[in-house]
Structures are given as structure tokens and as C-alpha cells.
Length: 345
Image (cartoon, rainbow, N blue to C red; front, top):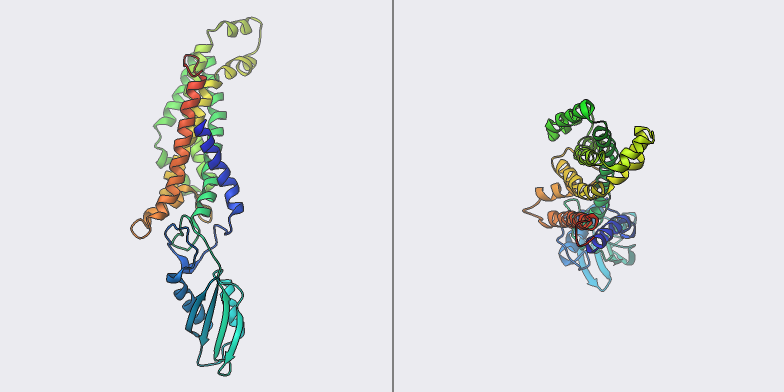
């Protein structure tokens, strides 16, 4: 139950968190790149000066003095020529400052004294190489990773349960032929299969779903087939056959419902494996592509900046590890709860 609560909190954060965030995940702050995690407001003194110099250069002026006073800033700009007031629009466009107010104009417009509000920005997980909020991006990336995990698992459930139930119930030559197909698919190298798909199709979220769903149903088919073989000899199945029920009805009413216990447990353990597989593909550049992102993409970006900004790897990796641990713990607990021989049940 603790793992389920943690998992629900992670899912809720990924779904609702980006909607409540003050900054869009794609919003860049060029003056606040690779900020370490901190609860302090930005821009601080170390980043205020360079940001003002960059904006003053765009306004064709120089910063003579910048004095911080509470939530505001007294800014003095000078230039060899008259400063165009329309250039002041660069200050609020940076999202670091508010609308400036001209306090004093001197030297025929070549000197301006401005009262500039300074915004308070918070980046609990820091920023990436482009100055984007890592917390917002990690939550949005969690949506994609969880979507891939759930969708691929549902595909594996649909295909694997149907395939395994038919193979196990048919038996004989049909079962042998269907299982040989599964063995052949097992023998195909997964990464090579994905590379072949990328050669013919552009790497995308849909391609990742197809590639993972095309191979992850194999284990589910084997599990369901084994359960079906043990159920075929049960009295209630023989009774249904004696009553003249067709094979499809027996599968639908008796075989598949009685395999749901092991199937549900296998599905809960399949979700973290799919998420980890997607992260591996995205880390190699074969998975989700920009502008979309996932935990694998963020971890790959963090690995490239490990020496200069290790927090870029730590934040997304923490989300991924927490989700995988919660899913695996939930799957283990569910297996104990559904096992009739267990004391938990």
C-alpha cells in the first residue's frame, strides 16, 4: 500500500504539476543556464549583472550602476547617443524583470535612471543547458514515460493473453507452431529491430510504442499459455465442453478470467520494464525526439553534462528510480496478495 501511495503521488504530480507550475517547461532563461538545485530566488547577485549587461547591449547602452533594493532595482543606463525608450521593452521580455519606470532622464536622453521590478524565480531542481526549469521538464517527461509504459503494457496484455490462451487451449500441432513463432521472435535482437524501424521510419513516440509493444507480449503469451494448459484439464472446462460450448466461449468465460491473477501481477512488473526500456532507447537517441521529452531523454542530456552540471542527471534519474521501485514493490505485494498459498492472502 505504501508503494501504491507513492506511485499515485508520482502519477498525480506528473499529471497536475506542469499545469500548476509558474513556468512552461519549454521556457528558456539564457541568463540562468545550468543553475544548481536551490530554494533561493533567482536572479541572484551572481546572475543579475551579466543579465543586465546583455540587455543593455541590445538597447545600445551601458550599465553605469545597478543597485538592488528589495524587490526592485535602481538601474542607470548611459550611452553616447540618446537611448531609445522603445528598447526598454527588452527588460520585461527577458522574464527576469518587470515593466521599467523612467525616474530621471538626463544628458539629452543619453542617461536614464530606471526603477525596474525584479521577478523572483525558483528552480528547486535547477536548470538545464538552455536555462529550462528541470522540475517542470521532469514532470512533463514523466507523462510520456508513464504513457509509454501503460500503453505498451496494454498492448502486451491484449496480444499476449489472446495468443497464449489460443495456443494453450488448442494444443497439439497448433500449440507447437504458435510457440515456434514466439521462439523466433525471441531470437531477434531488440536493438537491431529498433534500428531497422528507425531506418525506414523517423524516430518518434509512436515508433517507440510499436517497437516495444511488438516484443513485450511474448512473455505474457508464455505465462497465459502455461496457465491455460493447467486449466484445460479442470472439471469446469470439461463440463463446458460437454455442454457443447464453442471454444471461443470457453476461452472468454472460463480460461481467460482464471488466468487474470498471474496476468495482473506480470503486468505490474512489465510496466517498469517497459519504462526502463524506453529510457534506454531514448538514451541511445532511438526513442522520443524533441520537442517531446521523457526521463530517458533528460537522463541522456544529464549524462552529457555530468562534469559541469551533475544535477541535470540526478533530478530525472531520481524520478525514474522512484517510479521503478514503487512499481516493482507494488507488483511484489500484489503477487503475495493474490497467491492463495501466501499468508498475506
